[in-house]
Length: 596
Image 1 (cartoon, rainbow, N blue to C red):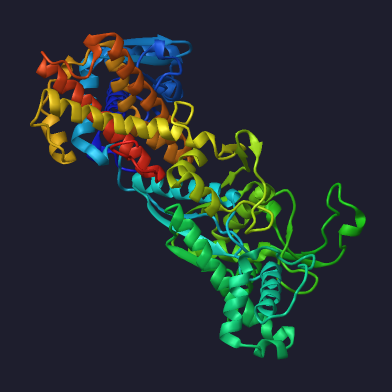
Image 2 (cartoon, one colour; image 1 turned 45 degrees about the vertical axis):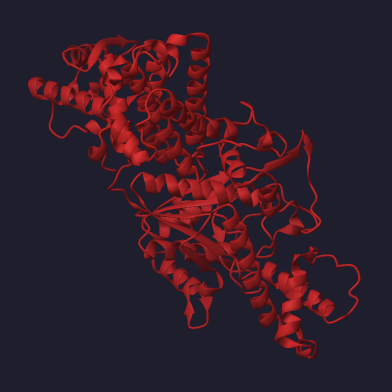
């Protein structure tokens, strides 16, 4: 578990106090040794009227304490009422404990934000994690559907890194299947076109887009007409390698337009190289464990009989590891199934030291999850863990109307076209402004609006508004207010933040205080969308406070005849600005000082 002691944010502080109260009670009441207190958590209550925080301590410890949860809750509550940080403790329902903190707690939380700056909420001591994402077949440019998985995977990797994990970003190149042979044949057709041949309409089954014309031109420049004299078996490897290399260069350029990078590009073909056949080695490894046998599979449920081949074949005992049926590893033509290569690939990840693996897949791969998780259990003897995150489809719209076609690709809108039209920030934020397993409507017109209905604008505007307040304060009250962020934070750290006592101010401070706890929960669940939701809520509360200040002058950030209160409110603004910038950075979105 990551170490939070370097930055004991408010929720971690209160959790430590709850743990201390429970341990003291355990000692006094002679509870059994070795009780697991890690199950005790402190969270925001579901209903804000119940208090500031809630703990499940009595519910999870009642069995070991040999007490009714409600009775145990009263005992724990009695000890917590003596805590200097806590104003009120209530026991609710079967044994939930609700806590209300003293106002000074929120002032101290703001000081923590200022003190930690860009590291507020960051922890250390995590595990080694492999996040594999995008992994699109190198058969053409990336489309808007790939875009969502790319942004999700990249943001998840950044979230885990912020949470202290040692993260490797990986791309699996599917360069060893029938699809890349189709790519090679399609590129060869463009090669003939580049040499002056009239190729006519693109035959059915080949890739029709114009994006392969540069590949054909490159082949013509490099080989002249020499490839025309060769048989397909002779020219196919050369053309395939060139087409894959050029497609991967284009994919990397497309990803760079979204500020997405990978640490490792892993070739599927490398798993079946002569003399180094990792797929065969993996099959032998599973055979030695007794996880592979020769057998027959029953017909697939609901599939026509002619689609099913009744034969003895090599099968992986997937059902022994939680899958619904056992899975074939070798096709009738003696080539490996995709699954066989995927098993070898994930074993390779584990052999490289990744006990924790996260794969980001498209919506059409949902049925593949159980078998892959079964394979990871088998090849790692249960020591490895695979979490598969499915990203659902993206419906591309313009003013509510579907956008379907692209001149360049032939039948889909490319990622690059979307980024070029609306910008990197809008694409990244909006791809995360919905849970990954829900279909996303992405309206090209809506994300360009400068309104509250456009979340990315609203959040970025919150950051810019904070800097606008600093500029106004410098002009009206504090000419000495530093422009440099570090110096400004140090200067504001000396302010009397206890004066922030209005309910709307306290609500904003409470929102800042929950940031580290939200990050922790988002990282544990592998859900970066929670950051986008949080940032929108924080920006909304900040904008609402600014608006109230127009109608109620005593709530304005700048009070000309009260320098101390102004400085305290500027410290609060700095807290908002710092957290917005930090959250946006994790999502890979810029935090502008001005909006134009």
